[in-house]
Image 1 (cartoon, rainbow, N blue to C red):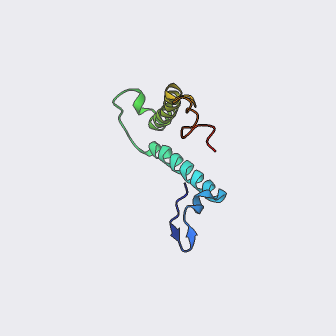
Image 2: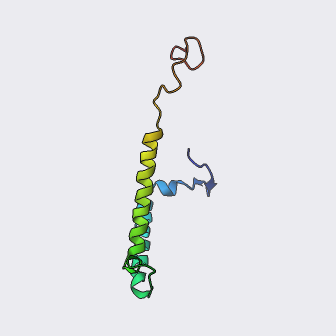
Image 3: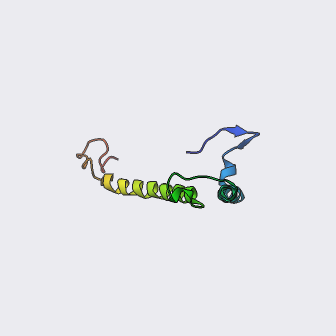
Length: 101
């Protein structure tokens, strides 16, 4: 469903649909990720455990956690998915049956 709010006579969501805007958003995302990892070189942190003091640990942790959530929801979707005829066939003459004309 497309958002129909208009700004200066144009639908404002058209900006997100343009390929050059998508490229800008991807570049901004990658630049932000690179800057946050590069900022770790200048931060002196003392980790509570051995591994949380490693360079880039929180970037890797964030990526793994996000990928895990995505894979987990896909698995949950497969587990909870119902067939197309889950509610059964409608009786002839009832609303929603295949022979409603």
